[in-house]
Image (cartoon, rainbow over all chains, first blue to last red; front, side, top):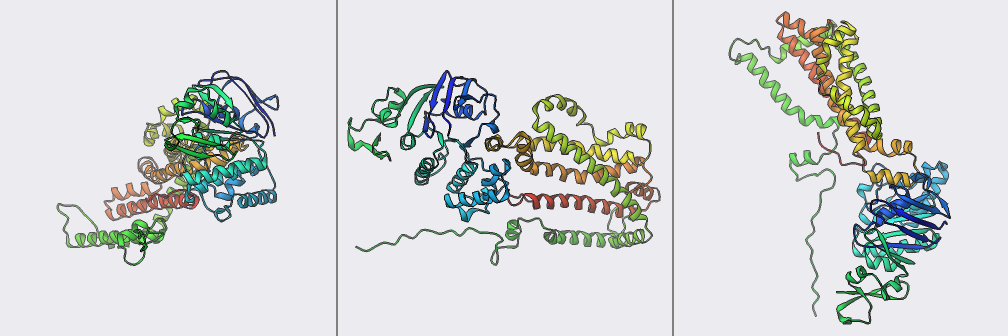
Length: 255
Length: 288
């Protein structure tokens, strides 16, 4: 799995972005709406114009079109092809890359089992629920065995319990497959639950990069504080919601 | 403590065709498939209309001096014209012209529409020119085409070609342009080249719009061919109409109009059926 480096990225919203993402890392881009999280994801995927350089394993990929960058992108609205059923949606990337029919069949069946959506194989997206669409989109994204996964707020439209369940699944899947992952969210809990490191973005600039725990403990970003997240030891404990994180720490949210 | 069992109101949503207690109109509304068997519903008002026509014409209830033959007389004339081959020969002439003109016009319209809809630069160059020609009615081309091609088979075919090209072209451009950019980005991120994106995502998703253009023009092609034949061509349903007019044969005129109506309807229904077959699995089907 490659590491990713962004050098002096500038475009209509991003300003002087310099970032290094290690291989197999789960990096979360966090910030409120309109700070350039999705744009930065699009820069890595090659979907928008930019100045500067994007390097995969120290090799510049700026001249590479999207389809040659070998990144998988999970869009906010999931973008499942409405004219293809679940099986065909998952197989799309493999077929495009010219894999043999048998290999495609095996891989699709394997992913249907892994995502627990075997019973949805012949259904079209219009007949899937939000959570089911999410699983199909995730299966489609990982089907071609990508080296880099980009997630653009994929759990945004789901209810709390489904989102929490799928969040855990995404994390387990990332650990299992070891894919370098960049995940965009404006949800603090999600960022803290998933990330190895969190990048805090504001007005198209990086204001802090650190582990979730450190950002929580010693955030130097006013924005983080303004969003109501603070240290558990300060203030009235009864007035806070405790959020259990999977890394053994917890996060408190001012009610 | 006594347990209170919560009772939630359960509303059964209708799935598929409602049966039993639902009214005739509800059943019609829920019946999504435009299969030809559903034509039975449309047949009832047609039969009522024909009965009224027969009665009114037989009893001479039409005011003024209009000659208005009863429906049964029109049917008799239809039989005579079919038996002596006049109607079939003229019908086949018109049909051949419509099929050739419509096929070439549609293929050209779809091809140009895909190219210009997908390739922005090409659209910028060609669109202003095509926009100038679009408002000209197909029959407006008749004088210039008569001078270029003379009175022959090419003239009506070219009229149908022009008539078919523009609406199919514009609907295709619209369909291609309206494909959600996220689907294109998703396909690209999965490794699809521009060509693959076009053939596997963009064109299939533009099919409903393409079919709208085809459906509209399938009927229009027949209207235009009749007008062209009436003005300039000695054969075809339009020419038969003009001959009947000079002989004061209203029954033949009505036969020709019925043939025209049936052909417009058949062509339109064919494309509705084809669209349904190709897209009903993945899209909400609209009633026509």
